[in-house]
Each structure stands twice: as C-alpha cells, then as structure tokens.
Length: 107
Image 1 (spheres, rainbow, N blue to C red):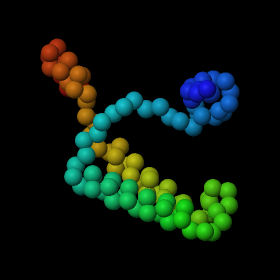
Image 2 (cartoon, rainbow, N blue to C red):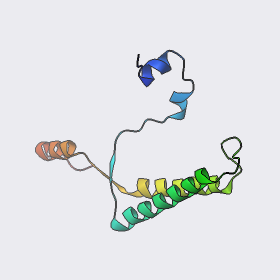
Image 3 (cartoon, one colour):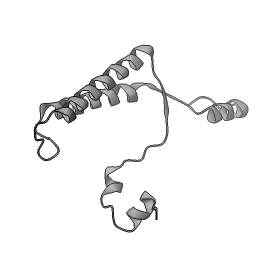
C-alpha cells in the first residue's frame, strides 16, 4: 500500500518537515551566458566534491560535519544560489499576455 508524503506527514510519521522545507512559488530566471556558465561550473565542482566524499573509505561520523569537503560543498551551494537568485525573473507568458491585453504597465 502506497502513501503520499502528505498523508505520512499528516499521520505524524514525519516531523519537522514543514519547518525544514520552505515553499517558494515557481519562478523562472533569465541567466546571462556568464551566469549560466558559472552555475554549470559550480554544479560540477559540487558533484566532484560530493562524489569524492562518498567514494573514500574513511569513517564519516555523524553526517561528516567535521570534513572540510562538506564545508566547501556548502560554500559552493551558497554561491550557486546567490548567482541564480541575482538573475532577473521572467514573468510567465500568461501574465505578460494578460498585461498586454489589458494595457497595464509592466511591474
């Protein structure tokens, strides 16, 4: 029998999930070629460090918090998000058409 995550959460089997997950509306961003390339490079660096961390045979301890690779991954993720969120938002096509039909100014 399969249960959805919402059903499991409502049953009290998953705690703290709603506080850990911040819901954001879907927003498209228009990245410049430089921003896109930077995000691509950061993504590859994050993958490389994560793969290297997982592949070594060293004991990790509790989530490997003391490993400098984890700190590096977190730093790269922050840079990745900052580049992405600094890009201009692209309004949905329907909203643009609606403004055009109604003759309302662009926000």
